[in-house]
Length: 212
Image 1 (cartoon, rainbow, N blue to C red):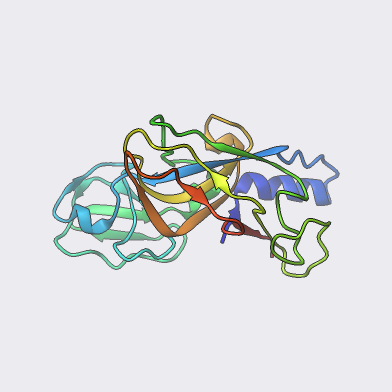
Image 2 (image 1 turned 90 degrees about the horizontal axis):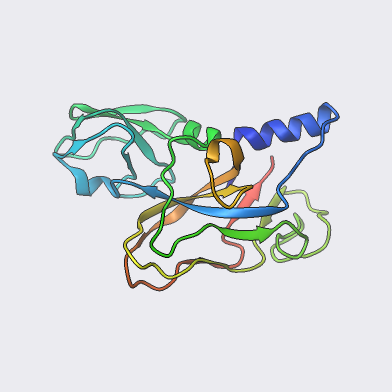
């Protein structure tokens, strides 16, 4: 389930309480975020560097960034599930990345090889009302959730894209997420995308965002 970035939360607070224009994106650009070192099982007793990112062998809806370079242990650590939590792994240290996603920093996006962010215009037709999936009228529900009403379709990879672990929505077609990211969502099932694979896509209603 998706969450809002710090930027989006600040924009909403200023609009609702402080009389400012919301300035929501006219088009949401969906960006794919890599776990640069893939699954933890693939980097046992292996040297890792600062800013390397990884997901547990059994995904837990979180990603981790190397904040102390070193050599990983033979066995996988007990991954923390608190925002910004840290864990030692041999001589390396990993930090849970929720604060990074909220700030739009330290995120490695797929580049080249047939990849580009996919734009979806903000509209009643393209995103569901809170009253139910695939609805196209103004929101009247109580759950605070929207989802994509159409398939989000990427191009075919012409080289390996790596392990895709998360999705970020941005207000621009390209550029740093720290200035433009509005939401983020970890993938329930991370996807390894290799050269020659079918073009990746997200089915209808698989991207969700909830305001509590």
